[in-house]
Image (cartoon, rainbow over all chains, first blue to last red; front, top):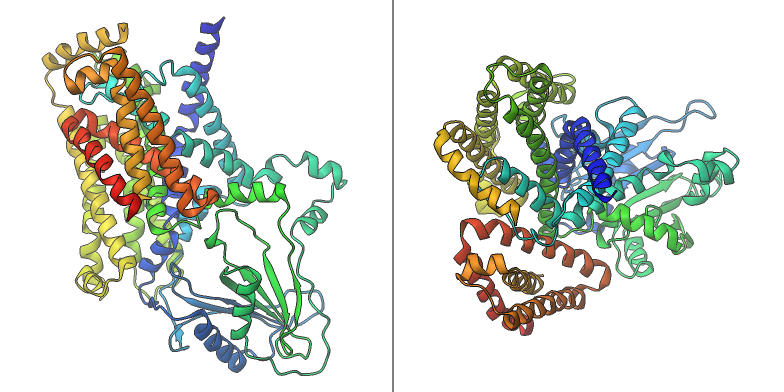
Amino acid sequence: MKDGFRQAMAWLHTWTGLIFGWLLFAIFLTGTLAYFKDEISHWMQPEIPARSVSSEASLALAQDYLQQHAPGASRWLIDLPSAREPGLSVRWQQLPAKQGERGQFTEKRLDPQTGTEVQGRETRGGEFFYRFHFQLQMPYPWGRWLSTIAAMVMFIGLITGIITHKKIFKDFFTFRPRKGQRSWLDGHNAVGVLVLPFHLMITYSSLVIFMSMVMPASILASYKGDVRAFFDDVFPASSVPELAGKPGQLAPMAPLLERAREQWSGGRVQRLTVNNPGDANASVVLVRDGADRVVHDVSSAVTFNGVTGQLLSSTPQQPVAMAIAGSFYGLHMGRFASPVVRWLYFIFGLASTALIGTGLVIWLGKRQLKHAKSAVMPFELRLVEVLNIASMSGLTVAVAAFFWANRLLPVEMTNRSDWEVNSFFIVWGLSVIHAMVRRGRSAWVEQLALAAFLFCAVPLLNALTTPYHLGTTLPQGDWMMAGFDLACLVSGLFLAWAAWKMQRSGQVPVATRQRAKPITLEREAN
Amino acid sequence: MLLALMLCYGGFTALCLSMDRHHTELLGHKPSVRRRHSLKIAGWILLALSLWAAVSKTGWSLGLVEWSAVLMLSALVLVLLLPYRPRLALSLAGLSLLASPVAAFA
């Protein structure tokens, strides 16, 4: 019975892992990149300077700008710069032309030091990877559903993997390289077991994030199908005071930052919303930045009267259930992470990606052995091989192409940001065709080598097309820009190593393989 | 975080050495039963100490996150070093155990 159960779990692990593996690989790789989404966006919009100025100073500039350019707006939104997101962004909404319509939004980026407008090149930046990893570039809500189903499959894969893996503790420290299939399995197990807390956290929390979408039954039952009412209860909107109808002079908002910090025992303000800025009953809502704690709280805000500065309301403490959901949310996003912890998140994200990748390789390797002697591979194995190549090495080439497009497409091009995204998908599609045309191993080697070249050349390309290259960013200590270039270089070197390994392992004479075999058999007997 | 990392790494190395197979591979002979037991206990104590090191510095919520992170990182580094550079893996463990009291009081 026990063996039957384990075999059933192994079967489930094998087949769910195969069907969703390609999609999960893409979700995990882009999700891992999204941990550096602000840094990627900054690299992709190098025109927007990074400056360290106090929140107070930049808020005063934003208020001046808005009072000059949008005095009659119904709402102002100000996003203050932070260490990771250097731009100061202001948006305002016009009074709607007709009652009940939404007023038009205008957005401008300001230099937080001088208050002048800055124009960055049009790009989706790191936001593209972030959005792709849960929306998959599909219309709402299909992408979210598909990625949530993939997350459930990942969860099943983790649990069945734990059950199937017989010797978790005995093999805890085991990794035997240069043994072909055995090494892949060792690597899959090691990366799965050693980073298991992260795999479980990231997968489970992704289900928590979309829980109201996946499991709406309790909401529908207790709110009698009125989902809107549920969200109104969970995230109470700050009450906007009625228009007084008399003009009022908005007081300087910078001092409010200090008062908000007192309320939150030191918490930072991320965004300000000013309702009816020209009115005597103007109100200012200060929303807290989530980056200073692990537990995420979307609705933590204080509201002041904009003219008198009187405290109108502040959101109450989070209830425990929401704090638990919020902590999963916070852990998944990692917005609290200091640079070191962020890099660790990145490494573990890559480990999850590697877990999926090694799993796919093992599936194919095991079955290919049976057909090693025959010249042609069965169609289904060939299909898996093509999809493996395109979903792994092809995706890395596509990511590199996205960065290249950002530097090569002309700045004044219309729909520029769409073309960046298009080039990502075109290159990814080409990699499928390439994998179909070429034989398995040469397709791997060529795509990995191309990705290696593209990544290694990113610093060079950056130096040729912008003045923000390593020669200036390193001496200035601009680690956001320099870090991106260096990270690309390191990824390129890693991919080059992988290509070289792949090429060499194709040339290993049969004799050494046979010599390696008795050892593995002996070990398995233990 | 560095202290927690060093303690974790030392702890995992001790736990690794407490297993017959790895002890033989790394040091060339089988460990005695007493030695195995003491290595095992030392390993677990070091891991517990690293939890304390992480939590005492930044509090429970961030401390636990950081501790999990260094736990995974140190195990990953150890397992990747063992087949390629076994002596480096061992000397790193010795070094981090020697340096950890210094880091604790610094």
